[in-house]
Length: 456
Image (cartoon, rainbow, N blue to C red; front, side):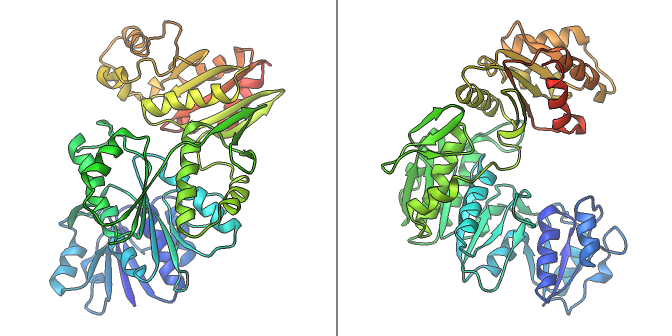
């Protein structure tokens, strides 16, 4: 096939383009911006466009398929030309569905935990040498690409995304996959990360359930109250329903064990979110024909998905973990997980907040009582990233302290002060949890760990 990508530079788009080119298809593409690592990947594959921008002359009537990226606008000249020529135009998820019609499609959806559950299932299948295709949203250890689609594998795992598929459709991406097996991990609406209302956000998942193939299977977190409502509202769907919940567990000497009739199963991960994700992953694997004992033998060696309670460093009994804590609920759960796992150690918990968001009192007020379990709560805000502050910094910091409802909250406003704070803190007997939805101004977190252990 001759296939052209409009917006080839996207993380998933360029991975699909490279995969199709390796399968022998003739692939071309355009984009107005291509950044790393997409640029280097496309160069290595010989697919980097000669010029940035949109060129309608690239669109010719011998093209078999045009794949439209999510950030290409409705007035894109290449899209307009493709429409004029009557070419077959796919959004990314539509094309994935086209490629996987003869496979068992397993879609992992939800507001959180998608990548972790995907990585758990992929780890188990790979460990057990069960072949599968996949599409995942982040680079995972042990897998070279974000996407792998073959002509022979009978199973495809897809991370379901509720964002809009393309400028030609206002449907969510996961609406196009038509799953045989679908999992929804839970629902957490955040007005600061979405432009739709709460009711419309719930409706997306209700509509997603209605796309499951007849006699297919819905696997869901039955401990999520919003999800319970949606399950009730979609009772008319002729599908199997299988709920899961956090399994019984115990913690002994810093290791979490899942309770089972055949003995305790030691894990290399911990925290209730991870335990819930394991329960979801197990249920999917069960529907794929994986035996219980095989699943648990494989999950013992699962370490972590990227940036979710991920080990950074340790020294003389103290540990440093990082976590992608993008919501107040997640922040609270991550602190609880570390305290539960290491009850004899005190915890220094540092959350990085976006500087501009921190100026919004309504945004910061969401964080009330989220750091109550931390022995020393710290908020890091890189104020140097704000060019102009229309509010007295003293008042701003006091507002943040009041919002978290911790009078002992430390607030650090630049990277240099963060280094000083960590170096001057006596770390013996303490653990450190670094949380952020950003990247600590691009600093390698092992460097922060080194500063923390400097005054041990």
